[in-house]
Length: 88
Length: 88
Image (tube, rainbow over all chains, first blue to last red; front, side):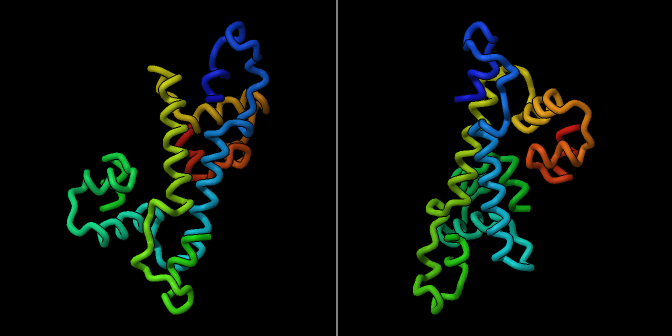
């Protein structure tokens, strides 16, 4: 994991903290890719104000029927705080 | 974009909405990958309670010096609402 190496002291990695550029790091790139996917999702949804996570929860409920909030969260990879916001 | 095809009526795509499985869709997979990257970032940060977006903002401020909140947001790919939360 690149973040890890970059956050270690210089003597451990041989790399200076000055060489740390956020644009090169996988977490940043994944965040941007996910942002883009969400924007495209939204553009197809048009004026339906539904988020990708709300959509995922609805589809999962259609497939599985009645589910507890925690179970629904696990099935859609959302932690308890996130699924609580989604189902509200 | 897979979301788009799947959200079109059946007669347009030849695919039933019953074939929609959230686990197969790029947005969901990118969200999970980003979640995992964030968890790994956090595990290396230990008890420092800093998020990946806060870290990105700090590194960018170190590189660029003083920046407006909006400019910092653009440089770190965060919309105004997000960068406002990060800098608070």
